[in-house]
Image (cartoon, rainbow, N blue to C red; front, side, top):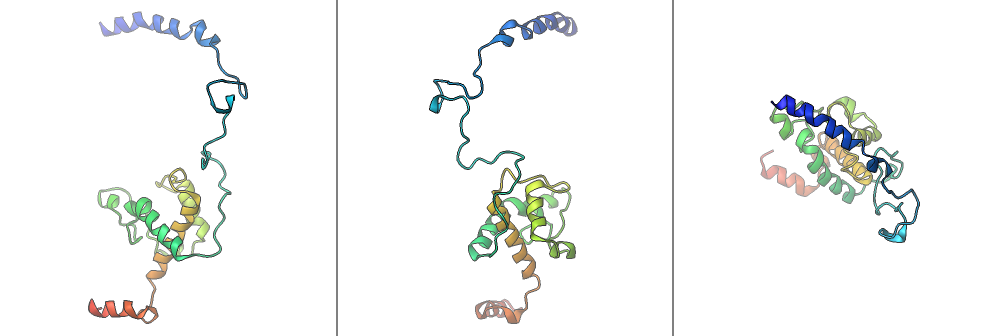
Length: 177
C-alpha cells in the first residue's frame, strides 16, 4: 500500500519541482539596488570580527613576548577547549578519554616538547588525527595564548624546587613534600 502511494505521488512531486515559477522567480542580482537592506545594496559588508571559513590565517603572527595575561587567557581557553581530551594537566587523560574515546598525546612527550610553537597553533587551527579544527571556535590570538599555556605546562614538569618563589617553597613544606 505504501509503495503504491509513493509511486503515485512521485510524478506529482517531480512536476512541482520542475515548475516554471521556480526557474523564473525574481531575485536580486549581485551589487544591485534593494530597498530592504541597509545601504540599499544586495551585497553587504560582513559583520565586524567575521572570519571567513577556510580563509588563510595570516592575521595574527606569533607574539614576540609572552605575558602573564596571555598565559592566564591561554589557561582559560585550554581548560574550555583542550582539557576535555588532553586533561587539565596536559597528560592526555581528559574526561572523554576516561569515557572510552581515543587518548590524545601527552604534551610531555619529547616530540611535543621539541615541537615548534607553530605546530600547536596549526593543530588547533586545522585539527590533526581524530582532533577536529577549532578555527571556528578559538580566535587566532587565543590560539597563541593556548600555545603559551601549553609551553608553561611543559616547563612546569621540569621546574626545580630551588627556583620556586619562597611562598611556593613554604607551601610545599606545609604539604609535606
